[in-house]
Length: 80
Image (cartoon, rainbow, N blue to C red; front, top):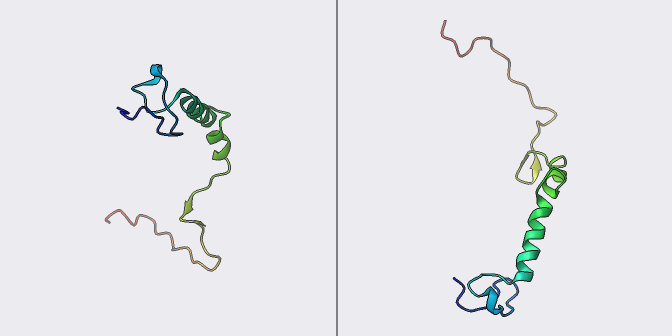
């Protein structure tokens, strides 16, 4: 538990009814608001999902223009 009786986020002193908590009521409410903004079908995460693309590091994964597609071999996994 938080023995120092101060908010771990803003470092303000906790009120008597907040003792035993890690964050003050104001910071807890602010974190809850930010988490609610992420969730749901119209939340930030859902709105960003249409803009996000699979990437490798900071570069978009795509074949270079001169890359040669390996030939398709029918039945290559079957032993005949």
